[in-house]
Structures are given as C-alpha cells and as structure tokens.
Length: 555
RNA sequence: GCGCCCGUAGCUCAGCUGGAUAGAGCACCGGCCUUCGAAGCCGGGUGUCGCAGGUUCGAAUCCUGCCGGGCGCACCA
Image (cartoon, rainbow, N blue to C red; front, side, top):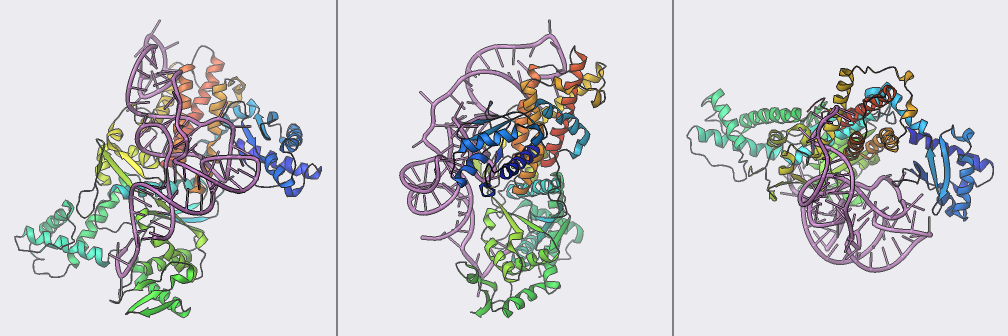
C-alpha cells in the first residue's frame, strides 16, 4: 500500500525531471523500488539514478542529487517523505514519515478480511488444474504436496482478484484402471476361495482387499463367473474416488470441477484434434502408428499419438483437453505437476501451438519430490508395493494445519524434506505453532483488555502518533507490506512467500510483545497499542487464510 | 548421451524482476515467568553462496563450461 505510493511518487518525479531537462525520456529503464534490509538506508530505496546513469553515460550521483531535489519537495510527492538522500554508489534512500506508517492501522481495521487483497487480476479468469491423480489408490504424500500447492495458488490468485476455477482432470479408463480392476478381481476370488492368478504388475495395497471385501458383502458370489474386469474396476473407482475426496476435504480442498477424459472421446474432440493436425500435415503414419511432428516445434523427436493398437497415447487427449480449456474461454491456464511429468509439457505445448492457440497462456508449475524422513531415515514410497505413506496417514499424524504449512514452506522448485519427527512435535520447534501462537496471543490480549475494562474506542479518537517506537514502526511497515507481497506471490505462483512473511511477522510481534506492554497504566497508549494489536490480528488471520491454515483464538 | 530442477551456516532452507556489511528455522550453550499466554523472549555465527571463466558501476542472483545430487527421456500416465 505504501510501496505503491512511493513508486508513484518516484515515477512522477522522474517525469518532472524529463520536463525540466534534468535527464531524457531515454533514461527510463527498469529501475526498482525496494526495501533495504539494513537500518539507515531508508524505508525504500531506488536504483533509478544508477540505471539512468548507465543509459545516459553520466555519473550516478549527479542524477541522484537531482532526483533527491524533486523528491524532497512535498508538492511532488504528496507529503510522503521525511527526508530523501543519496547514498553509496547512487542509491536514493527515502525515509517515509512516521505518520504515513501510523495511518496503516485504521486502514487495516477498516478493511478487515479484505486487507491485502488486490484487484490486479480483476476481470481475468484462470483455471488451476492440480492433483489430477487417476483413481487407482489413496493419495500419496507427493499428491499431497501438489494438492496443497495448487490450492494455495488458487487462493492467492483469488485474493489478487482473479476469478479462479479449480479443476481435477482424470481418466477412469485405460490400462492403469484395467490392472486395478484385475487386482480387485483377484482379491475377490481369493476371498471366495477360488484359485486365482494375481496380475503380475497388480496393485498390492491393503485397500484393494478392502474393496474386494465390500464387493463380497454387497454381491456375495454373484461376480464369481464374471471374467470381465469392469464391475471390479467400477467399484474400485467409486470407493477410491470417495476416499480421495475425503482426503482432500480433510485438507480443506474443494474442486469446482472434475473433468473426465471420457468427455473428450464422447464429444469427438480427440478425433477432431487428429483431423486438424492431419490437415496441416503435422501427423503421419508409420509402423502402424500415428505420429505427431513435434520436431516441427523444435523438439528432439516426433511422438506417437495413436498406437498401432488403435489406442491413443496420453498425449493426444492431453492436447485435446488443453484445447478445450482454451475454448472454455480462460485467460490463463495454470497446471501444477510433479517433476515426473515434466516430459509431457513440451508435447502438449506443441499441440496447443499447432491448433492455433497461444502457449503463453499456459503456465506450468513443476514441483519437485517429497522425501519423507523418519528418525533420520528416508521412508521409501511406492504405490504399487503399497509401502507409501498416504496423505491420510500424514493427516492422522500431524493434522491439516501442519501438513499444509510444511508443504508450503518450500518453493516448488526445491525438493521437500518432510521431517515426520519434527512435524509431530507439538512444541516450539514446530514453526506452524509459532505463527498460530502469535494469532492466539493477540486474541488473548483482546480478551484481557476487555476484562480490564478497556473497551476499544473509535479510531478517530486514537492518537496514532504514539506508535513511535522503532519496533512499532517496523511492525507497521511489515504489516503494510502484505498487499504488495501478495500481488507478487500471486503472479509468481509462489505461496511459500506468504509462509516466510508470516514467520517474520510473528517474530517481530513476539519480540515486541515481550518488551512492551500493550494494556497498561496509560489509557491513551493502551488504546493505540490495542488498535495495533487488533490490526495485527487481522494481518495474521488474512495471511493464514491465504495458505489455508487455521487461525486459532486460543491454543 | 539429451532435457528440466537443485547445490547458500553442522542440518533443513529463504534471498523479491542483479544492488549497499548474505539471512531464518532447527540443533547446541547461557540467561528471562509476583503484571496482557514461557507453544514466548534476549544473548552466543571464522559461510571458498559447488568450481572456473564471462557480462557491468555492482553477481548468491544473468551467460558459458565443468563437478555433484534429484526427476524424466515408451506405441505407460
């Protein structure tokens, strides 16, 4: 909020400088406004002079001096700065008036849940596709990371003003599902005492036996003579999907739409893609299969889209699906994928381009693997062998808040080491509690104030200039930073930034709390600090909501 | 062999579109509860930012090459 104003003020002064011939329009470059980490370097700093100096072949400090002259005139900046100065090689450091920071409190209190949100995505529709696991088994921790990441991205985009649709794309036909059905059938026959041959690459999880057991309960021996896998596959899908949805619900995740690959075939959309590509001479037949000339799009080799058996490979429906998403009118398609699916991206992008759509509208977020650590040992995972740890097990162990927080503590690009020992500790080592505790503590202060007869007065009656401690101004600055942080995090699709922000804010607050009394002797001071506490509570609540972690009033 | 990701403190990781003296958590050591919650606070850091070049006023950040780790490279998804 303040940063935006500073940016505008600098822009305005730059333009004034052009008018006054202090520099030329050409001096404009990609200059930055940042918040220096070090005290004494101002609340904001810009490298404008250094950038301009490079383009104009002049001395940075000379331009910086001129810029300071303009920025120092309140008429040019809306009376924003206490002082502006040149520093180092040519930085311009801006010190914002305390009153500007202090005015942040009433704004936050007034905006409440709205505080932090912005409208930069207003009018734009974005579809976030994630999880998209076929119903062959319970969600594993890898899916868990993706689920939480995708959901947090959706929350961020929504807070940035976008209209967001969460979509789950799946396929309940195909080889995987056939093997699943055969596996259930084998277990079913086993339960009936009929000799069977378990599929070589079948699914071995305990859940397969449970599904078979349910079939025995419901159907008895009715399916004994059925040689087809379909009834078994159908039952398995039903049970597993219900299970997946229950898991997602526990994580606080709800999809707006489930898109079944079937639809693409039923509506002839897959054939349409092939025909379209064929018309353009982008496919050819070889060895009984149909190939897509992906080399036309700069890729290493052409790819099969229809096998010699007549079945399509995953690429074809994937391309058809993406075209459908384009046709549905979204401005932006965000796909969240595990790093094991990275190879599919270029092919699909080539397909989109071939069909005349803009691949620039698609952003793929690839997240790296999750390594589960227990007692310093890596827990090996494999869906087939059922040695995986499921999201449900994780939730049983640590709960939804810890699960979500831990999955969002790392940027997607980093492999994530999930320390089960640490996550299960309900103590100070656990960063989730650290942040939640700040919120609970603020709520407690509110209760205390009420008990002591300190009822909050209207903000108009509060003298905010009394928030003059360095710590208070730093707190205010951090609080005021949420809107621009949210906007950056949303566009970058990086929810982990919110997590780090919350940890930093919690540290500032805990430190402040331990040194200064909020509710004390001086009633005026108590009122203003109570208002600060209420505003802080809003910021924590809003931040936690962004990552889908609860904000408890007491713990 | 090729593509993508990662390599920063003992461990796990941040570091915003290149910026000023590189940060946090954990672990470890010492201190702080007769006043708003000790799930907290305060103090304690000798890091070749994997290595070598390059780009420039300025590089952990961008480019090239190499080394190490992960994930892929099907007529599986």
